[in-house]
Image (tube, rainbow, N blue to C red; front, side):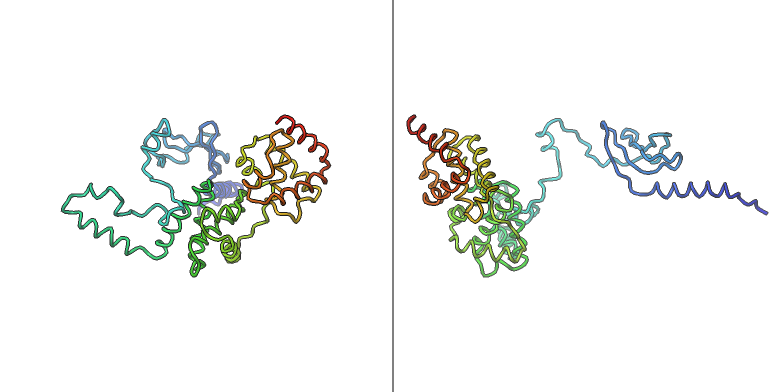
Length: 344
């Protein structure tokens, strides 16, 4: 009869099985000083850290040296690059996917300008037919996106917006097309409305007047489309804050960073004293920029600020009076204005 294993022996073998099971779980990789470490359980000593040897292609326990895997496959590229130019030239993966193109940058296009001269004369008629049929076979959605995204590219360039905003507006527009929200509305108004919404969402708001000037769409139409699109796409945006407009206003007026910092400081104090509540953010921001410019000795007239910003002089004057009275800096402002007038 075969001998029975003692309870002590059985417990040891059971422990080894448990260790083997736990070692099969997914490992978490880390890199320390160029050496890759991964976590798990060693079946020999129970230690929880391994290191990977890229030269031998082995995975080794960091305590007892047990080789857990060998002949590991290296999935990194086989070429080396010593600068960005070499890296871009040797890479074979192509450009990344982008929402700013109707085909995500993947489709091959037949018929680009200048390519006809690379084709043999006897093949040019066939080339023209292929280009024509490719345009005919494009889906209506792709055709819509192609025209809309070219208009978006123009608006982004005109307004000097970032690539992040460009990508987000393109993604939202495709979502609107998929839900059928563009049907019955002009493509330009939907693009303008989404641009207005995303700029506010990203903390770099543009006024309706600026978008109207860039797109050629009436601001009332942009506002109507914005309310509809925001409701359908569940876009919830808080009202723009006055300090969001300050960097752009100071740049447009050619004022220094000291004026910008001072204007933001004034607006924070005004917010604490509930001066800005219920007021248009553009008018409050313009008044704060005017006050900051006076305090820093870079006086701009209210008319110059009103023309650059797109608000009336009356609005700036009213907001100016409210800010000065509530913050208790009326006397200081009067002194600064007198000094500037004397210097002029």
